[in-house]
Length: 392
Image (cartoon, rainbow, N blue to C red; front, side, top):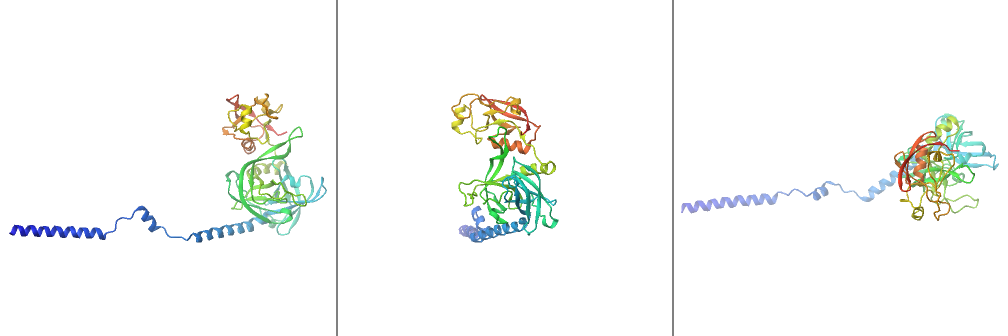
């Protein structure tokens, strides 16, 4: 009997302990899952509040940028021109405290008298220090007091990205101090330069051109294209348009072109010191546009469409002396014979198109340098040493 009582008491004790453990287990919360933890520690933010803040910051940034930069943007008025005899208007910007002004060569190309107008209302005469037809850049000197000179810092066009916000300031159609905004639409465009090639029927190529949809119109030429830090990343030079206003001026179509500032930084010191800049020269011709279509690649019997196809080699040129070959065989294509070399690299850098080649030459070489070209010749890859000359 006593043994039965002891067993019963022991069972009651065990049952009590189990009950307490179960209650404790039920009353203690389980560790939260990763999803639950994330939900409990991330504060709730209304989406509308974030959007309003971003818009306000962008607006504030642009207005502050204009106030800071516009004092350094000038209007350049051609008072007399030896070709047209009339006057014209362009833009420019202050480079340094010595009064050097950057603008386009085509703005002052045949000018005999120049006036430079500052945003403050101050006006002075301008002197042409140096010009470069290849990049369409000119350097002027303004006789202005120091309080009128607000140099604008120069950026790095080598770090630009498509889609990046940019701002243009200039004097379109005589509307002084006009600011427009847009994005970088593309990089690495090419344009014909104002430097006529030997023979009189073609022009050399300007490379590395920036394309933007920031509104650029006649009168913007020579003005700065800026990043949101207020640095000049290019000099506005041209637009592409299929329509014209009643005065015959092209109308902006959202396609504008800008000379990259890294080319300007390379050229301008020589323009100030010597009045001119000498570009490296190879002496080859390539198909119009510089890029091969698939149809052209097949007609020429090439293994790839990327690269620079040599359709002809100029006599007594660096290319001729280095042994590069132009096309000599019938291809069925107008003006593009088969059998020419295909340049696919320069100094170990890939060459995908003509812009890659011309940009490398302009930014990294000078006349007298020797470069190593990687060439496909009859589908065999070879390397060719070539010593650059000056553009004739």
